[in-house]
Image (cartoon, rainbow, N blue to C red; front, top):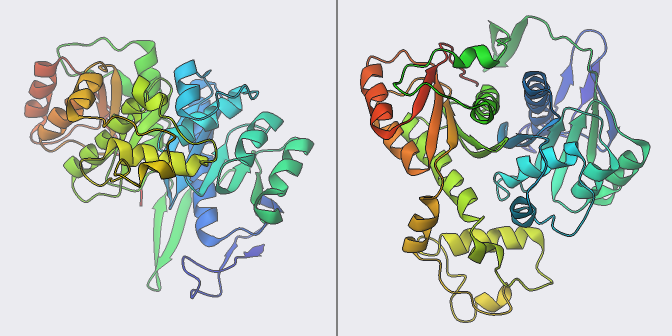
Length: 390
């Protein structure tokens, strides 16, 4: 069976299609899927399926360019999270909706125009959330009739809605063609569960259940993140994903900077920013990012600029305020898709409140990395399995 795509990675790459012997396990219920859409959809579907299997809770992920911007499970939202994620207006929130709100809230700027994957049947609660967010499409095992109607109306009727056959089992061998040459490999079917966290190599060996959950979320997210990759997680969701970097420390810094911004978004002064009522959510996200990075890339508070976003000019968010607020967080989990070659990764992770780490181990400098964890009171487990994804 073959499905014709609009084009490949770029508009000039035609023709483009997906095909397999027998029936495809996907049904396009609305819109027309693109090449990157389907890469996001199929990677995202695997992620949420494994996340639900590992946790027993509904799962969601927000994908952009074949890596997750965020992933989460369907835990209830606190009042602070509702405010951070712009859902404090009393809208009904099902567990599945909470999972997606968390996944998108991990990095709302990166999730702009995302492709969504969810583990459960899409309900009206989630559809109403998606109705007001900028997104390209969604893949799910099924849809309520009303939810499908809501989603099919997005993007002037062009929103891509895909139904996934839950019973589909892929072949054990994967193939891809690059420059006319066919590659083959066995599927990465490693099952990530609590067993991965039992080999604790640091002096402190206590990992609470909540942190184990966060480490599993981070590890499963990395399994479908372009490598090199590092993921920070907290409270049932990712809060910073660093994907596709050539250096491990750059992954740790990138993901750590995202985790810091996520924490800073919960500051009372950020939650109370006096936005104009006519400012859309994406513009609020951009304004918050500029506000929190004013010293590096922003001029959002300049005279004549702040009126574009705010009713009154906010006070600058100083480095001192940032340091003071970030010092309050010390229970963050971190996972890496491959070993840490140097202890500088631990030093950077510690700055972002990391207390728990899961990584494969196997570096010639493992002793130095373990020593750095012990110095900072960090608990670290060696999983023994690498999670490169390309």
